[in-house]
Length: 202
Image (tube, rainbow, N blue to C red; front, side, top):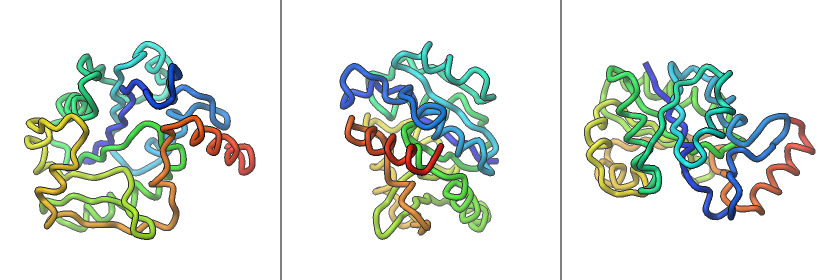
């Protein structure tokens, strides 16, 4: 079993007062575009972590059949949201795929490729990250062996330290396009994404 964790708790500080996840994009929103890829993939369960403006975010999710966990500590950083969802998800899952909620170019095949490589490991400890032309992106997959280390991790800004400590278990998985690289952190990034959706459709 594989669990995808979608991080949707942050304050979107670089977007000013706007919650970037709820911005319209194509025929839905930034968050819903990202979530659509997760739900269309071969992952077994999807958890969305909410925090900032949780009621608005959860209202956008209520018909989509995902598991939602609220992180009351979201202001302490990304790691607290990862830990909230890992704690809430099925304890016997084989792997956690951790993904920001603002990646509207993510595709199901990106996720499926990571799952395929994970399955080929036959239960061995592993960390898998997608790359495109040498640049590492998201989601990042951690096998179940790192669950306790994730829950004990004290860096507020995510799991990079865990990856560094286990560099020997890190496997880079080459993907065919740059959808794994682009998030919506700034107004300029949103404008670019909206223009692309207008040109190519939702």
